[in-house]
Amino acid sequence: MAKITALRTARGRSQRVRIYLDGKFAFSLSAGMAARAGLRVDQTLDPDRIDSLLGKDRFTRCLDAATRFLAYRPRSLAELQSRLSRRGFDDETQQAVLAKLTEQGLIDDAAFARYWAENRASFSPRSRRLTRLELQRKGVAREVVDSVVGTIDDAESAYLAATARLGSLRRLDETVFRRRLGDYLKRRGFSYEVIGSTVNRLWREVEAVRTAGATDLESLPPFRRGVI
Image 1 (cartoon, rainbow, N blue to C red):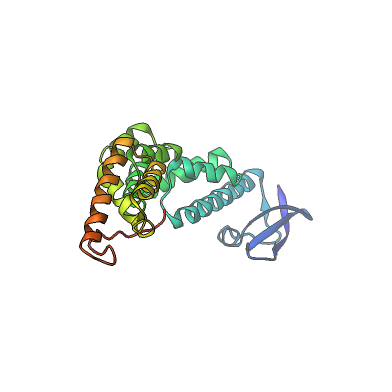
Image 2 (cartoon, rainbow, N blue to C red):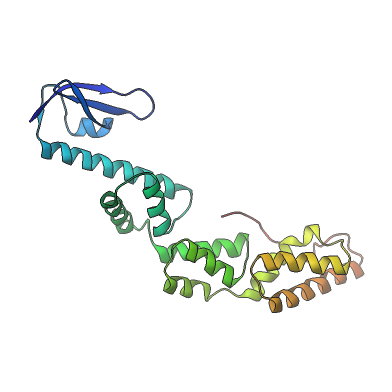
């Protein structure tokens, strides 16, 4: 048994309470946890009680870190695990937090994969192959990736991506237009066949607008850009 001889609030934004046992600093807890535990000077703590307090504190800190990471955008399970490992949380604490977040529906790799693919399609279209590679790098299981990327239409995605690029290409001659647009679509992961048909289609549309005497490409489909 050890006696609490002092409780001192640490300076700074962390709002942690330093607990001294038998005159020596022993450990710290969040201010909220220390308050909920009812800790007070002259109170005695046995080893099991100390371990319990430290375990709850680790869980709370890990949960807070995970929640902050999820606040910006959805994450895959593997992404979150990697983040928590880099923050130094032990495996047992991680698994407890991940189980809680999964139960709450905040971790769902299938939903994450759909979000990723839909966001790409809306803001930054790329090929089925490249989307698959991105999701695999996020640690999403193959069967989940397969079910999501199977809905991607490369021809449509390439056309949308190319349309978004027209602003900087529309006044170029045909040779440069084809080379630059083709290179752009290649970086987006599209096949040569899809690139060829897409570039041909866009060049015909650009030529039609020029022939009609338009000063811009307002007749071409608009495209909204964004970032994941």
